[in-house]
Length: 324
Ligand code: TYM
Image (tube, rainbow, N blue to C red; front, top):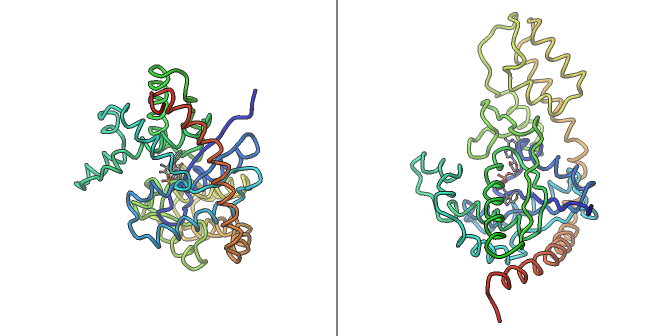
C-alpha cells in the first residue's frame, strides 16, 4: 500500500498552547515518520478573527517556528502557509455549493457564537467548508486533530462522498486520527483548554509567567491533610502529559495519601512542563535567530503543496464542468 497522506492545520490566532501541542502537533510530528505529512498554518481560518495585518503575519511565522522547534522536520513533512496556495478558496466555493445550510448550522463554532449572542460572520459559518477544502485539496487520508475538530472532519467526509456520487471519484475520503488520552486537554479552569476561554498554558511561556499560570489552576478547597481524588484533578490530568509514568504514579499516590497541598502538586506540574519543553526552547531560539531559515522552509513547503493542489483542481474543475 502507498504511504498515507497525512494533513492537519493550526490557526495562527496567537501562540500555540498545550491543547494544540498534545492534541495535534505532537501526534502530527509522530505521523511524519509514517507517511507523507502536510501541515499548514491556517491563516485564512485565523482571518475570521484576526483583522490586524501585522498580527496575522507575525503569528503565522511564530506558529511555524513553534512547530519546527517542537520537532516538525521539513525534510520529512511539508510545512506551508494556507494562503500560499490560494486555490483552496476556489475549492471552498465549489464545495459551498454542495453544502446544505443545516449541516453548517449544526457546527459548534457557529452554534457557540449564536448562543453567546454574537452575530457570526459568514466566514465563521463557512469555516468547516474551507476546512473540507484544505483536506480534500491535498488528497488526505488521515487528519490528526483534537476531539473538537472531529465534527469538521465528518462534514468533510460527507461533502467528499456527495461530490464523488455526483461527479465520479474525484476526492479521497479522509479519516480523523484522535489520540484518546490527548483528545481534550484541560485548561486552568478545568474546561477544555482554548484561547476563547482564556484558560491556556502556552508552550513557550517565560518561566515566571508559566509558574504564575500553573499556580492559578483552579482547585477545590480541600485542606492540606485531606486525601484527594487524583482522577478529579486537572493538575494530574496535565501532569500525565509531561511526566514519566513513575512520576505520575507518585503524584497519584500522594493525592490519595493526604498531607500534600495543591500548591506542592502545582510546583511539580510547573517543573514537568518547564522540563518537557526545554529542548524545544533551545531549538526555537536557534531557528528564530535567522529569519531566512523559516522563509526558505515555507517557500519550499508552498512549492511542494502546490504540486499536489494544482492537479487536484484541474481534475475537480474538469469533472464539475468548468473550462473548455
Ligand atoms: P486550532 O488552531 O483551533 O487547533 C489546532 C489543533 O489543536 C487541537 N486542540 C486541542 N486538542 C486537544 N485539547 C485541546 N484543548 C485542544 N485545543 C485545540 C485542535 O483540535 C486542532 O487539531 N480548524 C482547525 C485548523 C484547520 C484544520 C484544517 C485542521 C484548518 N483547516 C484542516 C485539520 C484539517 C483549528 O481549529 O485549529
